[in-house]
Length: 600
Image 1: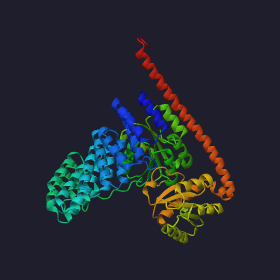
Image 2: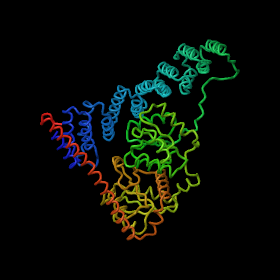
Image 3: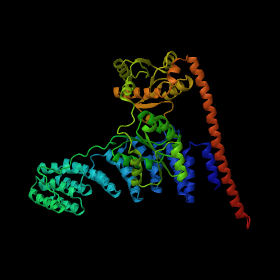
Image 4: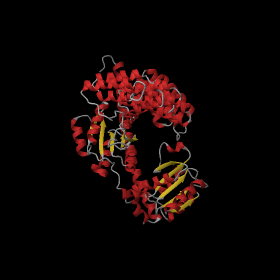
């Protein structure tokens, strides 16, 4: 126990040393505390993988995580981290092997929807792998999602046909229809097989048996749809006779010229509508993303309240589903801010495993204007019932800004754009060409000194900083711009060819974009800038300030921030210290009981 406490103190003093976490993990493992052991082994691996860590070593991270997968297969976070590292190392096959293992773990644990969500990454990376689609179909079927299973089987059937195996393609399509008799893709594909002379490859007897089974289950219309697929084949007369028998037993008259061939179902009024899902648990995030994408929604995700608010302000989703206990901004506070800004044009649902009593639900709905409140854990059907109940009266279109205003937001005319790119001629030429065509002002700074001179003369609307700018790290240049020069109205954007810079802490940058950039990217950045400025009165006020006034305001803001952060750190420190003292007191009491006979 003494060794563990000493290591905990060392970790608080040196939080970026992975060796301390590894040693502490081994001590917990020896004591049989698997949860704490896995937590510290994972912390060590994250330090090895962190681009900003002085201990960064991807090979050591991989070795540590492989050992974790052997010793702690139930620790799901280690799989995701290892897959991310392999992706960064451009080893896609290894990353997908990790996801296969994780999908199997979820399957063994009975978390079938999570197994589906993870395997979806594999089919996305290997869209031409028949085996991957067959496994995806199997998982969806086990998870109780026959429509998705049927879609996967049809995808596998198309690949089989492409590989010159029509009999296998037919068999897979029939299997899809057994799962979902109304599956439009399966019916169209089977009809194409018959039309193109593959009658001999189609097991028509199996299809007729399927039609009979559907009739026995009372699905007359679906049975007639299946039989209509055979109307032009070699068994057309036999299929017609069976269909006539079904109509007679069901009391349905045949309508001349009527076709039971599937027509594409009408799009639901929610198709393509944007939903923002916010949860710090990766598993819940993946699960809800998979469910709502399957329902036809466009899904956006965030793992903390601050990022969720940023996405909401930029993307304006029609629906928000958020956990209550979020990092950075609490879920209740997030709901309040969103509702204050969007009002009744948006629907918000809270998911919680903590605030479960009725009094909480009533208070949250009244104070934070939440539309639906669902306790965790929940069943998928329960979630969908609450979700659709919440949006039943939602307008068909997302609560977008009116079109006239959208056109204004997309216009770059009259804006000023500063590019600080050193000798990055390609970036300079692209932005120059965009400004020439869109009527915006264009300035170039070769280095940080010229950037400062430009800002001192006039604050630009957008500042593009290339990671290749000479003389200063772009993150430091962004910090200098906001914290020292006091610029708050400009949108700061990092342009980089290093994709590792697109991840992790963004510092003072509002957005990070992969190079090279085109006109579409520039249009998006202009729209994001205008939206941000229209929500704030900073721009006009800052334009009227001198450089000295901006610097003075930056100093004052910095001092206020410092006071607030100091207060936060003091509260955090003393809270942790009180907890440590309580643990030490409990340890002393236990020792006293062991040492003193009859001690209590």
